Length: 444
Image 1: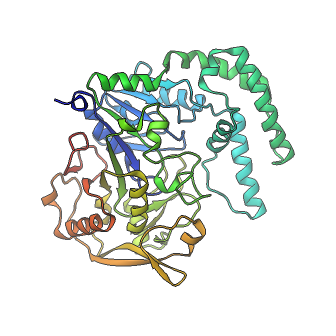
Image 2: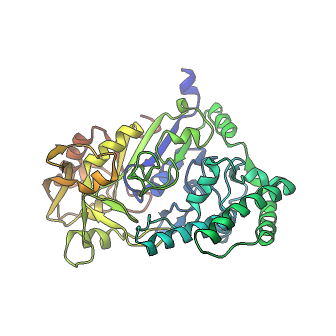
Image 3: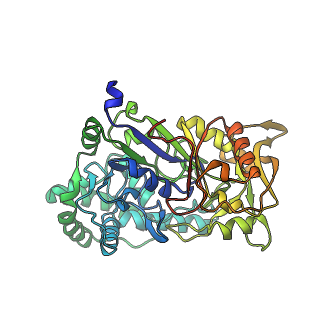
């Protein structure tokens, strides 16, 4: 047995579209084979809805592995943490009968989201809207401003909560800056120091027992021969560097950031599982080449929206819906080095007479087969479709490939050929058991 076989195996789960691909369910399913689950980027702007034995649970900041008894959950340094929200989420899970605090480990290096980040986020969106510049479509939870402070090297971090005097000094400096922006530029009310400081110190006492050196813990877990699962938030096309900028999130949500955002080397990322809806959705602003109207009953867009129950877990906003975009998927697979795909929500396509897949675009008189890098160019793209016959049989809950309708199998096989990556899993419903496994990420 080689040293690699003796050590644990790590799988990274990432979204390949604009988020909301169904990562939470897949992470929960894979956690049966992992000792721990790691969040490595984003904040509580992420939303994972799990359905276990018919019961729905919505998670935003805490890794999906918390639903599995005995599994450790890690919030890595790449995550921005709102302590008020985190403690509220912990309390909700505890009220549902889950043991959380003994299994949750938070990196001391996580930047904090504080009340002024939220106010700046919301005031900026309001100003953009009133000036006619157009909203970015943020969740208004302070994620972007917190990441800005991190990059500017002025952030308050979780570790600062352990040192009240240091926290107070840094808070005064940071609050002065944000109040200057709030009052002078955004025309919004200033915030006071004392309430923010007092609340932070109260929360610090609850958070301290959960602080940890996450990178070292992951390394030690692997040395014991145990597996880890890295859980991405949002989707590749919302990545701050590789997405449809500026209509993106404020962090790197691609697979490579699983290493930087948790404190392990890239050689510890053994398999990259890309999660892809059988169609495409997007929340918020930004270009979306295959978008279909969702408001008119009887249309395909309305079918995808209603049958797929396409509303944001965090915001409640209706998601924009459209056909699967294989050209966009090719970009995601290139960026992430995807080992295999899991296709989710295949059952939503049940009953459609025809199914279309975007295989490329017409852009300024030329044809291209991969998503451009410029958001304005993406907005100008006209999709080129291939059309496939649909199927009338139900795929809900199927667990074997040969149980799928012939046309469903042909559709998936063509998608696989177009994007150049194997389909290793198919999700046929929201429950963790509704899964077809073709190749296991922990055994591939």
